[in-house]
Amino acid sequence: MIKNENSDREAKVLAQHIYVCMSVFKARRVIDQIRGRSYEETLMILELMPCRASYPILQLVYSAAANASHNMGLNEAYLFISKAEVNGGAIVKKLRTRARGRSCLIKKTTCHIKIVLKEKYKF
Image (cartoon, rainbow, N blue to C red; front, side, top):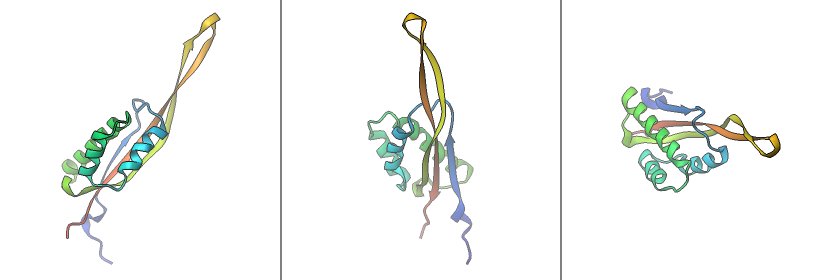
């Protein structure tokens, strides 16, 4: 079996900074809507979605498409989201002062978002 040279070309982007402060479940709701769709359709869905988690994911999709077009020379019209996953990240813990000299723990959950774009075959 002969493999095409362009068959395994994919653009990956991974966001695992502390700045992606959102719950894994909130991000997964958005990711489940865009998994397997074309790049242009994904942009329309994310721009019109009212969830707060859609904006960081929109930035990641833009970044993955820019990586695909600039680094690998792929055409943005033929791209689709082949893999999109959200995993839990580190939990940022802060102390908040309370009455009578006590303190309360505030936990901010973060998540790791991974998006992979592939090019559809042109026939």
